Length: 463
Image (cartoon, rainbow, N blue to C red; front, side, top):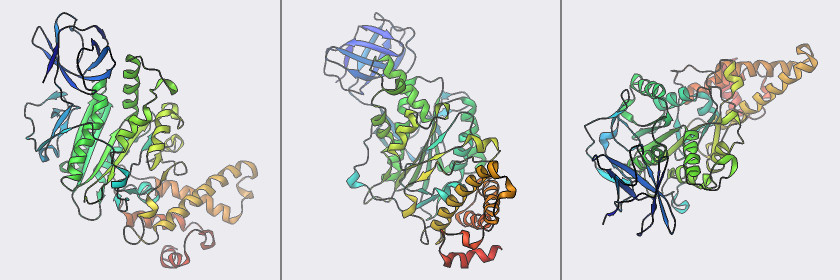
């Protein structure tokens, strides 16, 4: 049963404050009607014994304590989900939009189901351990930090780094190797229109648009929409993964915009701030998003998640990347120094990790030498960086033959293995072949992390 309030106690920005006079639910959807018959939507974001706080999705201009009627619907926020969504673009509320005009389209989808967006994290007891790979077509990810179905693998970037290009490349190239139905859900959080158009154009040019559902929240949209759009995207992913048995990859960009919206809302509610002004519940809020990822026992589908965030001032200890790293199973870190050297993608391999790849790569899923190759590349590249530092002390003429070989490997590794064309799609075989090519700069006795049988099988072919 709906309940109506006639008087607003206070309006502060997007927030309405009402005297609490009934048993209201947290997250309940309200309708706000004014004398001019205009209707707005809001959601309960705070409850106390005496006060109800509502955040309005649209603008609050024109609202007053005299001209508005607030109707509590008793429902939480729901979205319509259907197979008709595949290949289309939606706003934060799950409505089809024209990306160039930002307006809702008149034609709505024919819903198969309606779902509440506030799903719950997967019960750890119900989880199935991830063990199958997703090929992104990007050598540095596939070769060194392989993405596994059901994994949460964030990308930590910085302002001006090519995380948008990398996100678009992963969306257009990612695939599962088993031939199962595969769906990508792209979720843009607080992005500008030019970036949204860039993403959609890349998706269409790739010819893969029929496997992508896009949700776009623009930078000028209300902050409440910024907070619900990742949940809208994940609710959609859960339907296709666990009811339609599809393998689903969710890309969330940019989680920093989400966190800023969370901080703004927390400040408006006058909550006690924690680190750098973010609310104390930042960790649990992020977890409510990240932990909706994984595989469930008895279900064929899965949800894999790549949240992308920009680190303020490139500070990896900032609360946003720091909190994300605690919850997720690894991270990919973009390097400004590599970007200045025109290497794309500029991935800092020594600061990156994929904690689940060790149990999924190998003969059955990728190739028998994959684990050894990955370990050797990282060890040798670390040595190459040490040799570069040594040159400043002893000069290049003071290096041993092995050190000079290591230096050549480091340059080759960056230029041939790390560096990749924006539209270049490399499969696992091509990636591992390239790895052996760059390792051929080293003598066999320097390949101390690779089993002899693999050196005998692969190394001689390239020298």
